[in-house]
Amino acid sequence: MRFLPVNLDALIVELKSLEQTMALTDALQHVVSHWNIEEIIPAARTILIRYNPIVTDANTLAKHIAQLDIAEHVMQSGELIIIPVRYNGEDLSQVAEYLGITVSEVIARHTNNEYQVAFCGFAPGFAYMVAKNAELNVPRRQSPRVRIPAGSVALAGEFSSVYPQASPGGWQLIGTTDTAVWDLNRDQPALLKPGNRVNFIDASKSSKKYYLPPAKKANKSISQQQDIKILATGLQTLIQDKGRIGQAALGISESGAMDKGALHSSNRILGNPINEAVLEITQGGFKAQINRSMLVAVTGAECEISITTSAGEMYHAAMYQPIQLETGDIISLGSAKCGVRSYFAVRGGFQLSPILTSCSYDTLAQVGPSPLNVGQTLAIKHNQNLNAVSLMETPVMHYPTCDDVIVLDIVLGPRTDWFTKQAVELLSSQLWQVTPASNRIGLRLSGDIALSRDKQQELPSEGTCVGAIQIPANGQPVLFLNDHPLTGGYPVIGAVCNYHLDLAGQIPVNAKIKFNPIGIFKEFEGSDVAHV
Image (cartoon, rainbow, N blue to C red; front, side):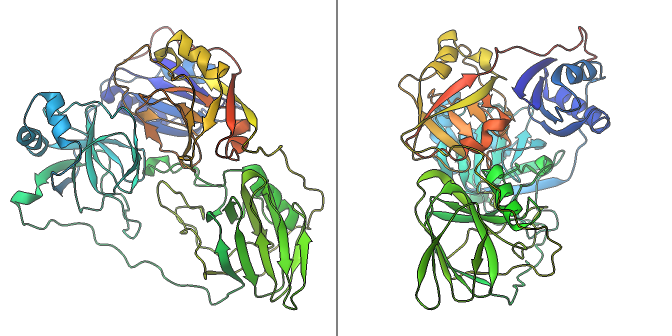
């Protein structure tokens, strides 16, 4: 085993095989609470472990884990799932060329071998499937696509999978399917689970329809209250709270408010529980009509707040202060002057139904209440036991502008040693500009000199954390944010320290980032002999 740093509260255990990974995963399930482990994310040959740094540390965990017995594990065969595929993928001919075979032979190898789901990750319902004799081992693309359509059937390394939702990705596309591998309207949203057997069939050669689990009727009940009517959403307005913590087993990342400090401040101002759901408004431009008396607050990215009364009078209100609104008022948020995301909270909180434990909308997983639309109405909760309002809240950071250079502390690892010495030095010595392709999934960065790798082999997919700095083959970093994929196949050179994640979520396009390593890259020490 190797024990590699990930962040101030996480490490990766690297093993020699998928079988050992699954065996260690099973062993860890029995000691999670005893060792203060908060979450485990298994992948191809690694397990990412998040722990509570207040009560334990990485070296202690490494010594415990190294003593566990991870004798070869035989995965039990599960239900057989049939997936019809139209073999029309954009990369099909390139895959054939890389393997030195015909397109027909690629299709034959994919359909003539039974696959098994090894683990899930990247996104909800995204299953990593392996077949012993498929011989379809191909590298990922040099640079990931910004958008891959839902239902795309793809290859990467030893794995095959189906993209559950439209998302970024670097896998090679060989076909498409209409089979929904993820559906929140089903009792079991994920069609494919570890252990399931999968047969891909050529849809052009079969007209047979295959059974899928029935979907339940979606709950469409809508509150009759229309306390707030949305008149403008700006670039994007989402409902966000603290996020979906502990849902990694479903392939779902934490998501939640990008600036949790501002989320907590907005709720403290109004006497709400600090993680009550609020509106996250990107770059201002929000406007709403108020249909009952209420108390609101706005925090986060700085913007002008104006209120127009039912009598036509206009006045301005301050951020980080309670704002009393009356029936007929219209509240407007101007463009963000610094920072990116502002937070709009109401005393009592919004009346919402959690989806998988949270009211946050995950833009990658597409889980949670949909982005707000013009004309939509929102209701406020009643009869809440609330605290007193606060007049003492202030911003916890200096919100950056597009002209600023923002310094982010980072932890080096887990794959720092995959890069040349010059690349590791360049990571912190040159500035990285935030490009317009950035979003809640991650900041795509651009530097004058790309980062070069010392190790050129494919990296088996492994768990990633919020703040991970992933380096695709083009050498230009992607800084993962809240809606990042749970697993990825490009090496991570370092990760933004937890205490700078809120700041990272407020960096605007064209601003420049300077990475500041807080230490050297160093493996954690387990015992000398692991039980394998």
